[in-house]
Length: 62
Image (cartoon, rainbow, N blue to C red):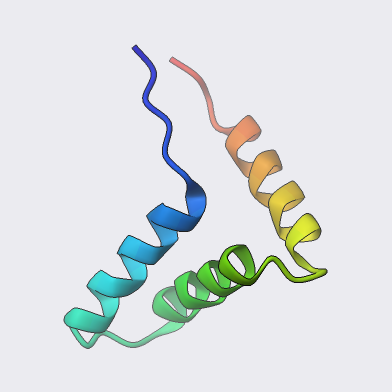
């Protein structure tokens, strides 16, 4: 059975976790930026969606 979740929800949860643990760095900045693009649905969201689709497609499926 395949379970799918929204990338905005996933990035939001990761951002909340990173903020709670007060960890800073490149990883937390990336998560915050990605969450912002998905949440705001700006003009750059199409590019980010395409990038994430390509990354997910490139991952091997069991």
